[in-house]
Image 1: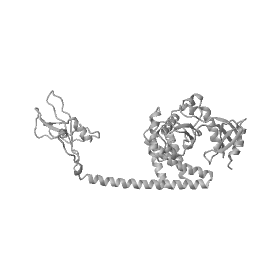
Image 2: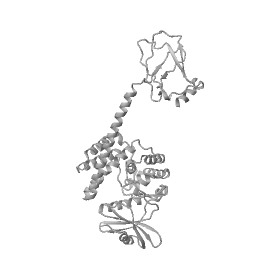
Image 3: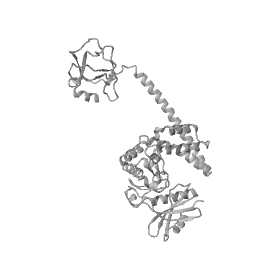
Image 4: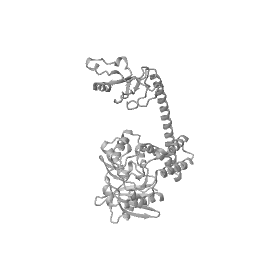
Length: 431
């Protein structure tokens, strides 16, 4: 049975002696697990009350209480945000209600955050970096969970097996997640301290500042991607990239290259975990909601795959059409130098594809001089006039490869090609 804000105010007076509530209002929280309220006392101070709805939620609050006590004042002082402080607690049967000192700021929806300024994105990135840079001894000394990269991956595989037994997960999603979890390279990361339950409801914001981070019930050592899943789920690429850029700048360690890919997977897999939780609680409405979201996700992914296949086919057709045009020609030659003389450089000549008729620029006298000139110089020590240089490939950065296949004759070059390219040519190419 849900408790009203006034009932929670009455409970708070037992938790904090001398507290005299004058006003109460409901507070945003996980409605399936907690009843919450904001209180205003006779001295104008504000308080927050969280009352669990079942034993598992009560255990989470008690775990958070233990975690918050592990944050010594020196550690808190280094964080760029405030953390909750427990003012009092009261036990009623198997459940414990907690009262916290009020923290400034307010929660914002993910839609509001995703359109925020770069200044706030920087604050969010810095807050994430500060959490992930916390000393791991903080978690180990509190006897909280700690996972290596492989242990974390195996844990997710076990959770996937559990979700599959429900028979309510679309087969396409099961295959997608299984393939991702079996890709060992995707799960190579440096474990760090993670919040574990980070989302928009656990961020308090005031203007362009993150004032506080709440919800410290799942602190552990694990995958930093856990704390990015809620960001990726917003589907706002610009917002995610901005937060990630500032996060990377603020962190002491360099994030791994697959961070966002795992975050996307974890965001999808959270729906399966929600389904399992709903079934365990026997909550039919939550179960139906979870099934609908999973089906919608499967349909969206199928549609994206179809569009990607169409794009790939179109790209292949364009490539085939482009192949009818004259390809760029690359000629590389390494000439032998006379005895005692300097070696001739490898030369690369690339024919630039001709532009469309309408795009051909007018050649003016001052730019005509920029045309590269090729000088053919006979070698005094040449032994044969019939040797030919083998073609060589050109690297991605535009430099010629020095690897050549020798012909039957040992003397593979009788001329040296020297490209003389004045400085203005590069400017013309750039244009």
